[in-house]
Amino acid sequence: METFFLAALARAGGVGSRRLQTLLNEYGTAQVIWSLPKKELLASNSIPRHLSAAIARYREDDPDAPQKLEESCRKKKIRAVNISEPGYPEPLKHIFDPPLVLFYRGCFDSQENCLAMVGSRNASSYGEGVAREFAEVLAGAGFTVVSGGARGIDTFSHVGALKTGRTIAVLGCGVDVAYPSENRRLFDEIAEKGAVLSEYGPGTQPFPAFFPARNRIISGMARGTIVVEAAERSGSLITAELAVNEGRDVFAVPASIYSDRSKGCHRLIQQGARLVSGVEDILEEYGIQRKAGASAPKKKLPEMTQEEAAVFHVLSAAHPLSMDEIIYNLHGAPVSNIAFLLLQLELKGYVKENETHAYLRAERE
Image (cartoon, rainbow, N blue to C red; front, side):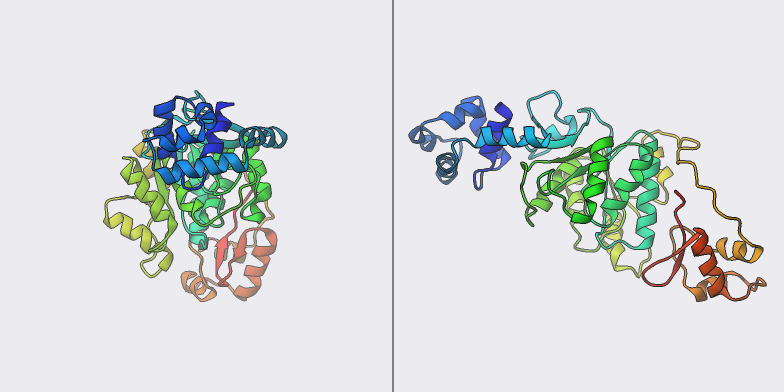
């Protein structure tokens, strides 16, 4: 029950984890703090008087808040762990401002070997390919991939990791709230094979200030943070900065110098982040060899004609090519009607067309 008294106190307006910890140092437990007479609480020297008053008001408005939180978690099959319990993630305890309570669906190990992957919500096809591949390989090598459950790079990282191993989604809302809504099914799958967690209690709706705050959990759980795509003012750079401040590794994936999505990554590299030219660079950093056959078996696809094969071999899964670029890269090979061949390859499952009408090798499930 101590966990739910802690969580209830954390809900009082303006009372953060560090302020609450000073109260705990004075009074011992959250249950004692919750039960303090108002006069004694207001007289405490541990936190400013306006915060003591906020706790007092919150208790008066909802005296059964801890019990309601416990009941809500029980009904929704949500678990909770506080920072003093053995199940709390060990690396997260050592950051500047660790959350005192975590709510979660699924399961995780307090000693889990995690790497964070973050990047743009408006990911390019290149970013999608990198995120999926890196996450799939890293999860297959035994890392748990931690990301934020957002659109774009976060989503592709979770999807890639689920193919070969575990992943954890850290949300800026309650773990029973699907945000973004299109990831509801993904979050359910993550909860089956990993964990969906948050410092915010059941039913908490997303709020802009919650997302920068949750970034400290993403970086705090991980040995290192990999930034795949990030604009100059991306929230991913906040995560990377937090990782640096906590003495964790930061890796950045370069891309075109003309891409606005990559300016943040290039800036990180200029500032000392480790440039990553392939997932092997990360595995090598941690002394791990890529496992042979780590990827899932590929689906058997229809055979290609000789002309289709010529077109297919100039394409890649990471770098989309326009039709003109495909023709240029064929170097005069005897191929006719490129548009028809690309359509046939797409129908057979070998090729996909992106939003800019450029072409990539399709991911083979």
